[in-house]
Amino acid sequence: MKAIELFAGIGGFRLACDELGIDTIWANDIDKNASKVYRQNFPTTIHIQDDINAHLAEVPDHDLLTGGFPCQPFSSAGKKLGINDVRGTLFASIVEIINLKQPKFFVLENVKRLLSMDNGSHFSTILNALSSIGYFIEWRLLNATNFGLPQNRERVIITGYRTESIKEISPRLLPKNDTRNVNYLSLKKVYDFSKWVNFSQHKSKFKNWGCAYNGKFIDIDIQDFSMSLPTKYLYQILEKNPDNSFFFNEDTKKRIEESIEVNRYYNGVEIRYNQKGGARMGYSIFGVRGVAPTLTSSTSRHYERYEIDGAYRRLTNVEYARIQGFPDNHCQNISVYDQYVLFGNAVPPALVKWAINQLTNTNGLRLAQIENIDDFTLTASSF
Ligand SMILES: C[S@@+](CC[C@H](N)C(=O)[O-])C[C@H]1O[C@@H](n2cnc3c(N)ncnc32)[C@H](O)[C@@H]1O
Image (cartoon, rainbow, N blue to C red; front, side, top):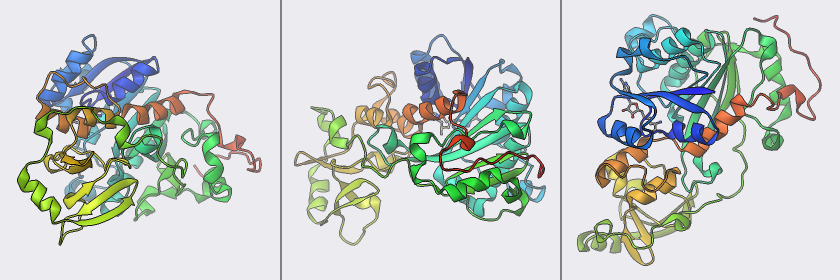
């Protein structure tokens, strides 16, 4: 199987594909540092450093298209033209490549906020565009913490596979050992197409799992993978002897002394202290007995304070790599400062590996095979 990686960054999808034996033959990103890292790690892949819109015609044939596309609002002018109109956006380049190349599968990744932005109209536009070109679409909100990583990072994964007939559809992101928390009655309505909704009629936030086909969708709020504790904690991935430059100076220490002890967990993140007068996460001092808050590319987050073995410091670039599930030296050919940005922007390979495997493994469970669900037949009448 051959894959291409759009908005490739430092290759989060690429690492997942490598582990699954999928060959990534072509990649693109506009960013100089990301491209430098990509080329050093994956020298045999054709990598174009430029605006994707200038290279649409060069994309080779492939079976799987992957991409964590930038979350870029559609213009209000676009909206007025109707929900099918995605012209001029980076997302439009994805639709164009899919249309042109007709890959069997695609897996896209984006931030959780995409489900609720602008009362769901953004996500509506995306799903409508993807489901109107012959693909069965399924999305699910996943958290890195459920994939062996010490980080609370929720991401929407949107998958699609090409299908000629509604009779062939089978959601694949709800594996059998994960369905115990799903309400079977709600699941049943997935196969009752009269319950599916037209995108044009939807005006609110989308739920955390759903599927779409031919301009219609159905969604359900399912519980997270398992409600169990994380399998990895921050203290387990720390560097032994980080450089002095990662520790805080006397000034910061003084401010820390003025903080108020909190000692509680928020989304699995241990909060040790909050700065007086401000309980915002940005002013917190974190512990390492929980998971990390979502790593991002924004510089202020890179200087967040952690209490580690009685000292105060920020996380190192290597710890960022480990929290995202990349090899320690993945970004070694660029500055430490820039590494934080690239790791913060990346997709955890483990999370998308799971999604790609579920999608492409056609032996995956079909909903109709789930025990306890009455045998109901698919009808295409509503389409
Ligand atoms: C959310 S990041 C994706 C990160 C990637 N999944 C990874 O694992 O590193 C989005 C990427 O889109 C790239 N990008 C933004 N505009 C672009 C454009 N016009 N053409 C190509 N790439 C672009 C950015 O440089 C950034 O690396």
